[in-house]
Length: 297
Image (cartoon, rainbow, N blue to C red; front, side, top):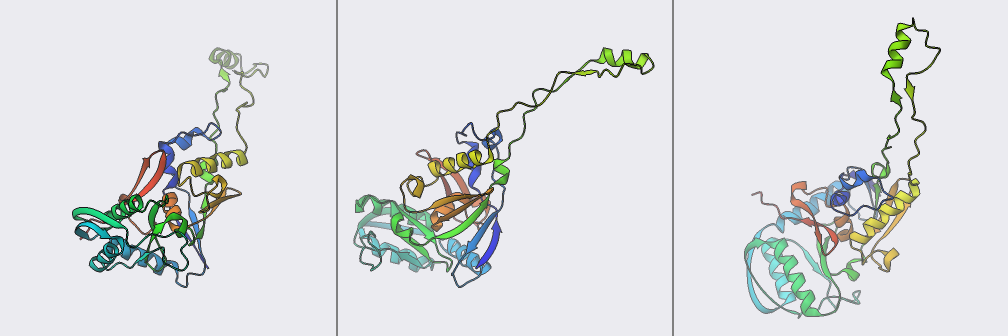
């Protein structure tokens, strides 16, 4: 097992999200700069090698391709994209022994694109296959530590999970609102000074007192933050909401998240991919981290 730290993207989503009143107001404008501890279990390769494999795959999928097909089997399109990019694709098909709900390799797909990055083409093909397949499952992609790309229904991709620990202490901290500062009486201070310092011990400050701010408990703030995440990031996949893809456990001031790669991608992006190529966007009330292909030669 290896432990490493990354810098996740997730809670910059709070810049546009409706923040519950139980959370500090600062969350509405701050990005998540807290570290993420990633526990990698049983992969057989170390973190550096895994990240190198994944980065190389995204570079391969950044290659521009031209594809114009009509009613072409899904399996043939995936084979074409793998051959022209060199990326290793692992579609989850219905005829796989372990897949109870995979993609039909014969699904007909019609698409016409010219010199578009292979990753964009791949996502469009998945969207068209999803609609044509009519299985009621959302298709997506995710990376393995070996640099391969798994493709298929989220239910099947949920079989491959890992654990990451997100330190959210900064997001749970509440900045006190000192709105009851004491008043300073300048005239009393001058009189006391003019009287040779014989002010009878009377202070020029008046009013003030203990702060009476309504600050929720740490546990309540953590639960509100967890609820915000599960309601906006892959809401159909969290076990607390009836899904089978991911779970969040609150431990002190950290979140222990168990889930597949595509869920962690939506939470934290990819630490090995340039930040400028990772776009946070909101689609149909959901937060997404969009991985953009590299434009570097």
